Amino acid sequence: MLMMLTLQRKMIHTLMMIMTIIQMMDKTMIIGMEMNLKQIKKEKVCGTNSGA
Image (tube, rainbow, N blue to C red; front, top):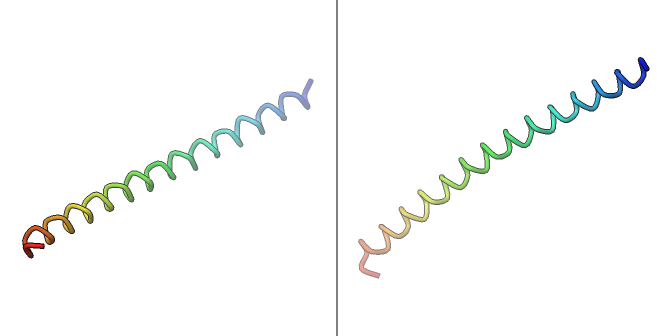
């Protein structure tokens, strides 16, 4: 019975770790996406300004 409880605790702990890692990854991905969008917008503006 005790073993089961410790196993469950370990499982929950690993799940929490995975969840936090995924959240962190999502945040970095979103930031990266925003950066890319800004870069694309800048490039488009530069392209229209140069008359290309």
